[in-house]
Every structure is written in C-alpha cells, then in structure tokens.
Image 1: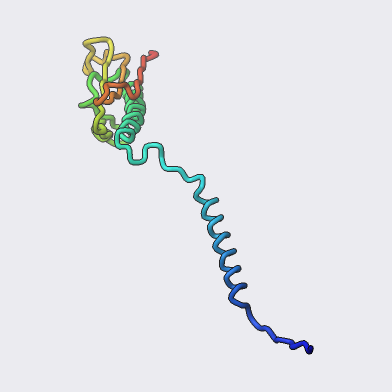
Image 2: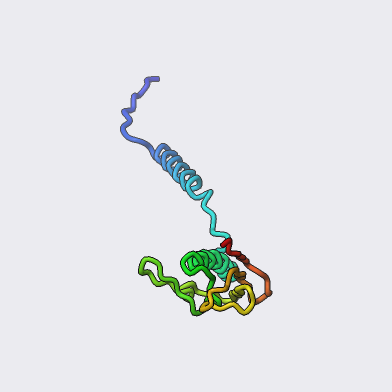
Length: 146
C-alpha cells in the first residue's frame, strides 16, 4: 500500500463548528458575569413601594429645609403648605416636593397654637403616612436647641 499525502489547506467543517461553539460559550460566560449581579431595584414595578420610597425621601428633605428655616428665622413655620425658603436667591417651595399618590404628610408644629408671625414654633413633627393602610412611612421630629 502506498501512502497518499493529502495537502490540507484551511479548516474543515468540524473545526469551524468547534471554534464557533467555543466563541459562543465565551460570549455567554462574559454576558453572565457582566449581568449576574445586576438587580432590579427593590421597588421596580410596584407603584405603592415607589410612592412610599418617595415619601420617605421627601420627609427627610422637608425636615432639612425646616431646619434651615429655623436657622434663618429662629422659629419653625406654623404651616408648611404656605412656606417658602429663599436661600441664595433660590426660591424653594414645599409644593415642589410632590406628595406621592396614596400618601399624605402631617406637619405638627409645637407648642400648640404657635404662629409663624409670632416666631414661637420651637419644634415640629413631620410624618408621611400611607393612606391605604394608615401606616407611618417615616417620622421626623425636631426640637430647637436654642
């Protein structure tokens, strides 16, 4: 028997298929590693949770603004619905913080009967409440130290 030497050039179908499968596996592994730790936000698609999160955040923002008002005026306002704060020529109204659907804010200045004009409101309690189940989302309480 004589050996016939075949001069092969290029890749055959099997080699190309194996290479293609390896490339796909590498791409799939890279995609998995890149996206495996990507999580949906905990409130994704749940509007009640989104609104509660927004209300929670807003209570902190409003409380900070109230502290700034106290620093400027020496007293907290008696009603936040009509309060604006002007710092460095920037007018900020509490109405700019949207009250999320299904929630309400309850602001209670103290002592009872205090007024903005008299500048005798020395503390406050601000609470965000879920209307559907009447549960407290967040409460901020402040008492002036002066």
